[in-house]
Amino acid sequence: MTLALVNGRILTLDPARPHATSVLVADGTIAALDAAPPRGAEVVDLRGRLVLPGVNDSHLHACAYGLNRPPYCLDVARDSIAAITAQVREAVRRAVPGAWIRGIGWNPGSLAEARMPTREDLDAVAPDNPVLLQDFSGHATWVNTRVMDAAGAKGDGVFHHGDQGLVQRLIPAPEGGLPGVLRETVTGLNRLGITSFTEPGLGPGGAESFGGGMGPGVLAAYADLAGDGTLTARVSVLGLPSPMSGASVADTLAWLAAPPGLGDVDPRVLRLTGVKVFADGIPPSETAWMREPYPGGGHGALCVRGGSDGERVAELAEILRLVHVAGWQAGVHVVGSRGIDAVTEALAAIARDHPRPDARHYVIHGQYASGQALATLGGLGYGINLQPVLQRLESGTTRALFGDEAAEREWPARSALAAGVHTACSSDAPVTSPDWRPGVAALLARAGEGVTLEEALRSYTTAGAWQDFAETWKGTITPGKVADLFVSAATAPEELTDAPVELTVFAGRMVHAS
Image (cartoon, rainbow, N blue to C red; front, top):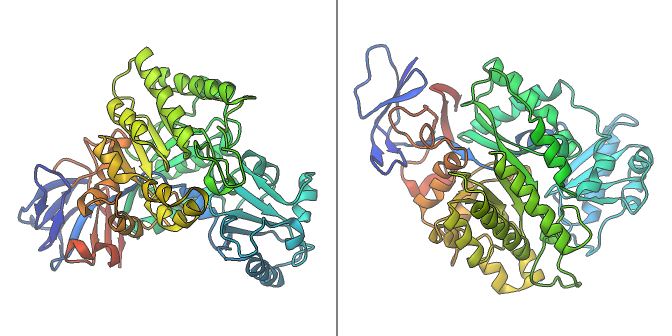
């Protein structure tokens, strides 16, 4: 199929040729810019609309996002325990006796009651139905007594980090299986102009997270879709050897000894690029490892195994060393200022002792990265993966925990670029929506850490291609690269964040048209 998009404004994001008025697509690749359509081509008159490279969401839990939306899950992003339990009460009224009630989105840092919820709160409205409510971040799960009894668990009904597996493992499999969930989810992503994304953690360590959305079976489901040609996005995967709480050398060694294979699947559609390592937690639960004290005391800690800070630092460094010397990319979830310093210091020591060209390790989130940590990452040629929408949503939490100065310097996009760090931005869906437009808007709105529109667009396209080791064949609208692109209703760049996506092309095929 030959497709010609004409009479438009093509923002190629290729410095060698940044603009064009038309693009010709043939055999799944960009054939030419500003060329006359050949006879028989399907011609789309853009009428001055913008065309950009397909969005590369470089940190998107797509299966978890699909499983944690209707019809599988309620949206319980409410500002009080009372509002959430009222919503659960209504769901119970509509459900059959004994049916599971699942939800996602509550935020422990913004509840009006200023306390953590308990199982008794849910028992009062759902005594006979199992109820499981995931928080917005994936780091806490709130359940009722019915679920706790089934799990043989004790406590107040709120489980954190790896302990969530006690109750998450009980969630029944979705009707229709995981391939159906993924197919529907990717179709929705295409409507947003997303043609590539990173699944940041699939494996034995994710079997009990997000309702099974990070388990090893998800990779097999992706392979099924890629094998039959129905996967309409390019998916890079980080393997997850260890659970969210308790990453270990032993788990890493076991995974590295037998990483999952993908057979004959096209590596430009689906491939395993590296290993996900959880180094610490998040500020709202006071589990990010900070140099600054939390208001209630303490600094958090690394979440790898070990009985002291020193032992945990050594365990983390050894995990990263194993990943590095095995030739894999490391994507490291680390948020706290002290945790980020520990990760970057370990990466620098590993690079010195075990030189390896183009490892492309990167810090995931990096919310409180210091100037020194960014300088280290930039000097190593490594990256950072930021979530701009989270800065907008959670800046109040940061101010309450650590003060105004910390809120101004968190999620340091401008500082990272200035330090030469490869800076990709992403949604972290289902933590936020996978819509990239609010992320770009958030980047532009920052004062000290804001970026230009072109830099923001690159953080959602070319930077993701770099993270995927794929900048030579995707990420810009350049002849010879894969034909992944989208058409916005906008006719000027400053309109992009408010305009819908009207057409998405993946591998030369139209996969969304409004």
